[in-house]
Structures are given as structure tokens and as C-alpha cells.
Image (cartoon, rainbow, N blue to C red):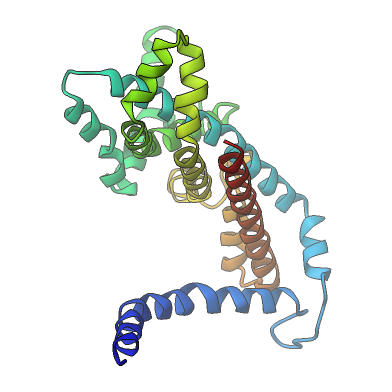
Amino acid sequence: MNLPNKETGWIFLFIGPSLAGFSLFYLIPFIMSVYNSLIDSPFNREFAGLRNYIDLIQNPVFQRALINSVLFTGLSVPLLVFLSLALALRLNKATYKRGLFRTLAITPLVCPTASIVIVWQILFKRFGLLNSFLLWMDFPPIDWLNSEYSLLVIISLFIWKNLGYNMILFLAGLNSIPKSYFDVARCYGAGSLFIFFRITLAYLAPVTIFVVIISIINSFKVFREIFLLTGYYPDKRLYMIQHYINNTFVKLDLQKLSSASVIMAFLIFILVYYLFNRGKKDLSYG
């Protein structure tokens, strides 16, 4: 009779520190952010309703940051997922040194952010390797981080850093598909396209949903690299929501800071919620 109580005690013993840390560092600060976004100032503390959100949405700087963040996620995530799946399919068929390629693929994950930024500075700064090569080829140098190519530079960094992890996830999904399914399909005369779309992609649906969600979340973390490469005020194409939040934090504008944080959290929640529900529908109909 005491066994359930003991099990409950052990459960709380193990998850208690995690819940305490989550509440202390995430839940309580988020509740405080929601509260600060609904008052006029930290001093008066009068209820302001949605006025802070309306002022924020009408702010052209925030509009630029929001558009850039959505554009970056919309371009980088599909490209990352496509390349990860393509490499996983290719590596799944490889027979030569697969373990070595897997190790190389996840190497960017263990590289410190500062080291990655230094490499990208060596490549793309005004006097970096790429511009040295352009000068050697008698082409004018390009200020990569302050030109129309700046977003492509950050997308390439994001893909390089996350490609290997996503590829490993897809490889795990591919290895979980029974080989007999492919053999039966070939016996019935199914072509490569039919097998790919009806078997491979169908059984990779749960993994694909997870990869997309993780990629979206990671796309909002790219601020670290952009900030270390370009500082507080980068090229207008690289000014993300996190830049706006960081700059308002420096100015101690708690109302704008809190409102922007709540909006960003809301956007991430909507995207993840939509993908989870879409994935459930696809799996149920599949």
C-alpha cells in the first residue's frame, strides 16, 4: 500500500530540481514580463491594457526586426531540413566510412560559438579570405556583413552549425523503417518516386516534424552569432527581434522589452502548436 506513495516521492525527488529551475529561470520571469507589458511604467504600475503592444507593433524598428526574423526562419529552416534529409538519404546508402562522416557532421555542435564566429570573421570580414580571393581574381571586395549578401552569410552559418544534428536525426528515422517494406514495394513494381514519397517520407513524418520544430527554435538562437559578428546595430537585413529586445534592455525600457518578449514567445508557441497538430493529423490519416 505504501509503494505508490514511495514512487510518488521518488518522482518528485527527481523532477523537483528541474521544475524548480524551470519555474525560477523561465516561468516566473515570463509571468513578470506579461505583467510588465500590461502596465504603463514600473513606477506608476497603472493598467495600460494593450497599449504597449499597439505602440510596439506600430514601431518601424520593431516591424523591421519582426520581418527579418520571419524571413530568416522562413528561408533557413526549409533549406536546412531539405539539405539534412538529402545528406541523410545519401549517407544511409553509403558503405564507406559512415561512422567518420557522422562524426564530422556533428562536429559543429561541439564547437564553441566564439570559435565559429572567429572562423566566419576570417572568411567574411572586409579583409577576410573571400575578399582576398576576390582581389586576387581582380574583382572588387564585398562588405559581406553590410550588403545584400549579409542574410545569406548568416543563413550559411546557421545551416553549417545545425546540418549535422538534423542529419543524424533523419538517419535514425531511416534506420527505423523496416527494409521489408521496400522489398515488398519493389516486388509489386513500385518505382523510386513512389517508394520515396509513400514509404520513406511517410514513415519519416514524426522525425520530420521534430526536426522542423527544433530548427525553428534554433533559428531564434542565431542572435548570438549575429551579435558577436556585427554588434548592437548590424545591417538592417540582420536586425532581429532579439536585437530589439537586447537594445531595449540596455535602455531599461521594461515595457517595450516585455512586450517584445511576449510577442516572440507567442510566435514560437503558435508555430510549434501548429506543427504538432498538423503532425497528429498527418499521422492519423497516414
